[in-house]
Length: 340
Image 1 (cartoon, rainbow, N blue to C red):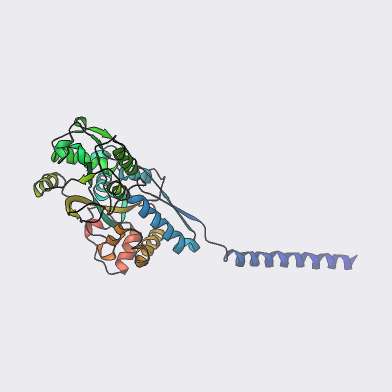
Image 2: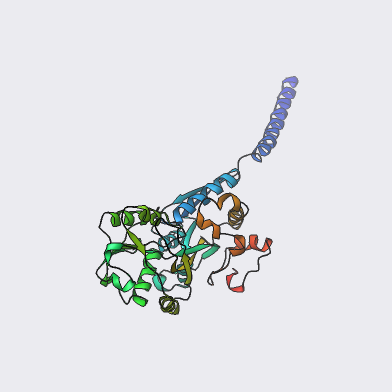
């Protein structure tokens, strides 16, 4: 009887040791587990613009370079800047591309965001200038913005930065309102097709150069031209919207574009919510600039996305702390108004 008790005690001791050994082994295994997934959706614009293809390039880069750290990136088309800002605010996406001026309005609660302030929006990096490209058919009789009265013209997606720009330009350069023009709210490729089918007289295709839908319409059988902004036109616009700059669409960029076109534009930006993890944003922005040579040839607009240009042309909206960390490491001096 005593032997049985001793055997029972020995067996219990062995079981206890096994349990503790198992726990130790489990802890060791857990350190080798894959990192938890970090899902990153970047919202962009219409597929015929610049935002969507560049968003695709970024998401592919992040999956390739940061996938082993658990980053799972995807791209989503959208109506453009305003929708992207609203989606970030609602937590429906982690990153977005938006025009710098609209990001400022969202941060301050002005303009379209008067009753919908998004004070947690943060810049990650400046990108390229979103260049205004007013493309019209040759037979439309349109030679200036004031000639758009009564014409069929695409102003971009509802709630997009392009639509906002059109309202400003129509009013302050052309002396028109949307009521004076037969406006459409189509994606850029849809607008290009409608122009080729005789259903539209023109479109504004704001985007980085070159813009796919503009390449398409210039290469089509439909004769088209691009309207210019004189220095006087630019001054009228700049007086009410000082975030606009002057840019040139170079001759030969598009098929049959045989002269330089003076136009205007605004910097586009990569944005995030202040709530997005600091270390994640640090890695995302670091991967862009430390793989610049790899991505710069993928789209001409990315030629503007250089580290020395990362914070140039940004209005006073704070940078995300993760971006600040990377830029300080690289010795970039950050103005006070851009610090979180």
